[in-house]
Image (cartoon, rainbow, N blue to C red; front, side, top):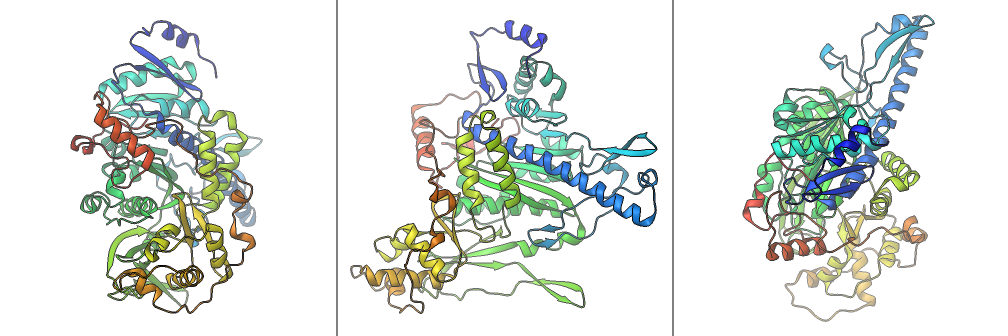
Length: 587
């Protein structure tokens, strides 16, 4: 996709003493040297992942469309109707047969105002006496565009994409975006449109008009979620980033509740819990409009989290939301945690009744160490990835290696995700278990083998190199550790210590530490890199556009990028940076 003559002329007219050209993928932008518009090159991973997911979404959308036409043709053939008559039938919405193992219900009739729906096809001109239907290219809304780099990459790099609307409510950002659109030539000019508008108002006034809505704010996305879930068509996709990790990871629980409606817990699984809090919040906003979400990919990258969810409308399926949410009980003394589902169902005579979940799942004191519990949530406890999607995305990325600037990082991330246990919320940290018992740590392979030999499943997690997901109950996990300590004795500890209480009990399960065949994942066995170091120093969040960075800020931001601490990860170094507005994004 070369630049047009207009683009070339525009390039020649730029005074490069004041601007610098930044190239990423097939897009180029010109940025003012005074940082007038926010740009964060660390978000290249975010943009590459989004492009990979969008490519898969377009392919899946086409497959669903063809399946719909095939199913419709069979129905019409059975009923004796011609294709021409079929084109006049009531349009229906296509939904996947199952959503995380839950039936999605029947198709629903669509109203006339839903004519822009991604799964709706309109009859074209009759050819050979038959009405042919076409699928319109997907429309994309980038709600917080800043420099417009993300929108430009979508337009120039994704085949089959339709119009891309880039919004911002800052005049400097809109001017920069329009300048960059011209700078990228005719392809960008024909597909990308930049508008000055408040994203919340724009999305509210354009209900069910966009196949894809991309939210990538500077901080929390909470103020945009209500309007965003209304702007996506049935079967469309919402892509959402949150960088306020200090809030989501338990640094300010009361602030997290005010923004997301959940209480976070400070634990090793805090980053995955952050993902699940964000998903629960999006689901809550969608439910208000008889809609629900289906996560296809949820990732923790660097200093932020990003989720990709499809949105559907169904009052009946919406009732199943409590089955997908849980509270978390975390012991304050040891690493034991337990999930309390919000709801349950009872089937009787082909009817499903919905009831509150049974509880409590834990006593007042931890059965392992005798300490109290902290309670967090509610969180999304259903799967956060669709493994079929993950496989498709990974395959697509590998087939286009040269088109992804952050290829190594996103392949490593997707490879790790593809090996996660999809139905196990949160995870344990082996080093934390050993820290509680004050014992030497077994290797991950030995611990994995013991779990597998006990008849349970175990895997890694993309959210932490040391994290382990398993469906083994905590009683089994502690029995394995008791058996390990018997072979590797520890020094005597005070009687009131959690580790002492745990080790004072005899194990009911005799652990088998013989190495199991599946103790290493396929990626580990092939020595495929799964967790890569940052490409450069201070790789992390940047200051807001127009602000000067001090040496104090540099040291703080560098620590964030290197340590990935939940205390300040993705958060600003002073109170001013906690204020989130609508005029800057990580694009």
